[in-house]
Amino acid sequence: MIVKVCGITNAEDLRAAVDAGATALGFIFHPPSPRYVPPAKYLELSALVPVGVKKVGVFTSAPLDLDGLDVAQIYGAFSARIPIWRAYRIANDIPDLDGNAEAILLDGIANGNTFAWSQARSLKPRIIVAGGLTPENVAEAIAAALPWGVDACSGLESAPGRKDHVKVKAFVKNARAAFEQRAEIHPRT
Image (tube, rainbow, N blue to C red; front, side, top):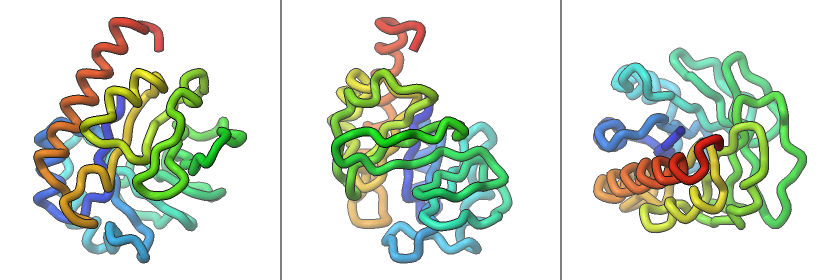
């Protein structure tokens, strides 16, 4: 089970996500994004991430070779020296998926947009649902998609690049509860 809080830009938000129980943190390496983290800032922040919490670099072009990243989440056809979560933006139908990736991340067509989560229900390999997730809808997404993980970014913010710590805590709590309930109902997924 992955519960990822993405768009970490500062130490306070990082600590709030870790304290809430997030299992992965996303660092965005796309300069136009308001959630962009320069490599030097990432190195400072990565030193604060405890063992057992995945550090995920989010890339829209060839991934940087940064110390300490556990996973490269890639929008596009690039390779990396670390495990890849291949990310796809979903408009209507699910595209052909990269079977060589450790996981497939399905995202809305634009930031903050959802997609029909039930489309992901029968997909293999590991599926991570993203796009428009909030504390209020994450349980519904998990019930519909039966994913390996969930990922939220803008739905947890008080302003672009700044997390609302109450929302982060509620998101992680609701996601964990939904995963536990799913395990009781669908023990083999």
